[in-house]
Picture 1 (cartoon, one colour):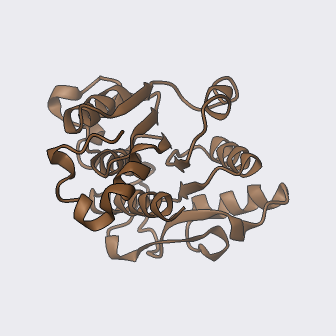
Picture 2 (cartoon, rainbow, N blue to C red):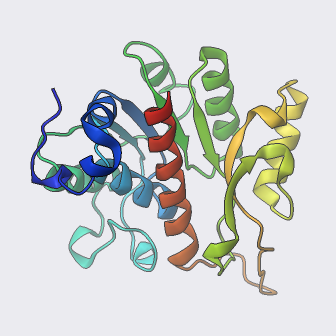
Picture 3 (cartoon, helix red, strand yellow):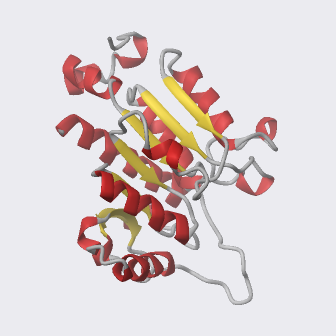
Length: 234
């Protein structure tokens, strides 16, 4: 049963005991624990999701300090998924959270798409190849999935929205994703995504994508809100 302790006293009046229980019974997988994924994980933990699976093979780096919620001087060089799992347990000791400090690829795919049921998947990775693979596997198994498009080189959180992939524009990652999925015969209108309507601001001669905290953090919170509402309404 759901542990209705102090953490939930401000949430229960909004969603009720049945809503709390429904969230407690849900399993959500988050692929990618960077600027977008880390805020999504934290929001899902604070919103009562009972089982979180956090997947990221990277470690916290100094360049993450400006935008990733787990990035602190004290966590540098540590596994991102391990640090986020520890944060979730500090927030809600009763939460079930699995840290998977590895990258999603063909060698790790089976562990996420076989076995226990999954209620929702959030894809917040950058690799086009594996974004496509995650989306195809979710569609094949009828697992609700939300994907994040590009958040770099943007400054305006108010430009973010959740829409379908066919309605995205001015986003190189979304464009490549549209092309790859279309080649496989997948309807773009069937793919939900977190998308910024803001055109990216690319500085001449700068190869590394620029980033603020505002845009990826808002994208992660928007994604978590959508996931929670979907589980409550299911």
